[in-house]
Image 1 (tube, rainbow, N blue to C red):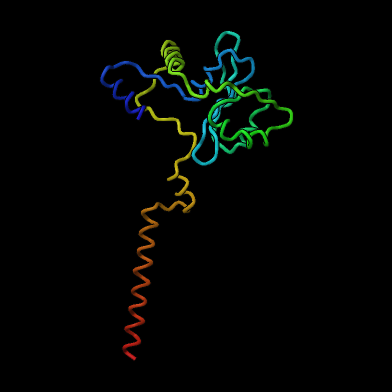
Image 2: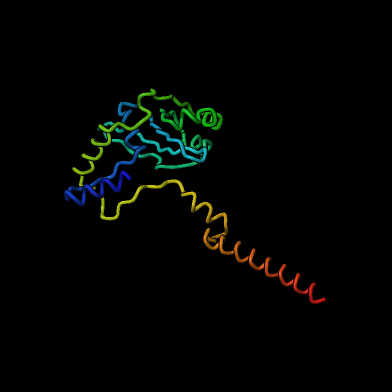
Length: 190
């Protein structure tokens, strides 16, 4: 919905559009951090979304680990040095993440008030990108790190769509009824 609204506004006004990922906007909440920061969100399947950012001396930051989705153990394994962690993904999966952390890695939990992206930081990142000429092309799509439920079901079915599976079930039931009907007919003929 948000992207559709932005595309509509761009189409109506002719203004340029740039994209700002949520995890990046969350990371900006901790611009003064001296260690890498790892914002986390909750995934709908008991997993977490995360990325890791490191602030540079000149006020910029580098993406150390791009946006990921996975179980708490995978997140824990991507933390290789002392890191500042925060977000709803951390607060909901803290025990699982801590249990999987390498013994050599310590984490510090960020304050509760930085758990969501700030509209101010989204605007600042957007302005920085526009100034650098980072303008979204005509084809703008959300960055889906996690596969959709439909993709997972399609894969589980061996590459058969739900429509084809339904048709196969109906065909099987029709065939079964025809066989039962023939058996009844054969018994009558005896």
